[in-house]
Each structure stands twice: as C-alpha cells, then as structure tokens.
Image 1 (cartoon, rainbow, N blue to C red):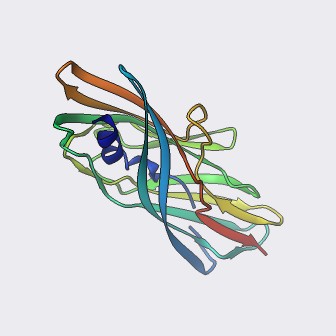
Image 2: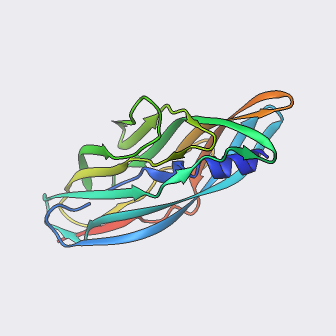
Length: 209
C-alpha cells in the first residue's frame, strides 16, 4: 500500500535538476529518471522506486568564460486518490538537490511555471556547490500538478566539459526527500522518504571550446 502511494504520488520529485543555453546551438534530450527510495513508516522501513520524465536542454558548446543556461522541464504528474484501498490524503515537504556542474560557476536559478503545488511557491538556495529546491505543498490525493521548469544560469570555466546531473548517492546522502500521508484503519500514517537517483545519468553536456 505504501509503495503504491509513494511511487505514484511522488514521481513528482525526481524533477528539479538543471541547465539551457543562451547563445550557442542547443541540444535536447529526454530522460526517464529512476529514484531509489526508502520510506520511514510506523511499521518499519520500506523500499520503493519512483520515476519521472524530464526534458533537458543545454548548448553543445560554450566559449571559455562564456555564459550558458541549462533547462530541465519536468512532465506533469498526478497524486492518486487511493492506494491499496486506502485514501491518499496528501504529499508534502519536498526537497530536491542539484549539484552545480564542475567547470562552471552558478550565476542564478529561475523557477518558472508549475501548477498545483500549494500556496507557497517553490524556492531555491545554494550552499557548498549544491542547489536545493524546496516547496511545502501539500498536494492532495487525486490532484494534478506540474513542477516548475528549472533554469540554471552558469559561467563556463577555462576548459573541459560542463555536465549536469542530479544529487544523491544513498538514503543517508539523499537528493530527494518528501513526506506522504495515507489514511488507514489505524489512523493517518506519515512516511518521510529519502531518495537518490539510481543510476544518475548525465542530463546535459556542454563542451568548453
């Protein structure tokens, strides 16, 4: 029951990652991201996976010291109204982490669009080379939502390539967290969940040349 809820209700998360180009010819790719997740429930830990499709765009090349942008556009999702015969009440308190690519510095992040995410709009912060995107929700069971498009504005380094991906390598070093709430015969169950992309694909790659 919890697996079905979390899988369907949080495909949401995988979303928020990365980078599009201003002046160079652009390349685009569609990625099906798989997150390996562990939910902490009153009955113990439960493992699950969730999937999210994103379209990622970035320039093929950028000059040394030049500016570029990488854009990630997540597909819409829907929170189920029930799972295994139990009411899905909501999912809430989302956090998604994205590393600043090697060979680039971060200038700004734009979060545009999105719908059905609650009264408080998504926000971002950066610390230690990691961008964290958060939104509180809640998203009710049965509701349709779409995460915002994430655009990271970067300045290229002197050489190499600028590869964007998602953050996270384990449940303890998670790149995505959220909480799901389900109404059951023993009352409401809250399941804080930690996830990491497995595998963690390169979303975009820009050569500095």
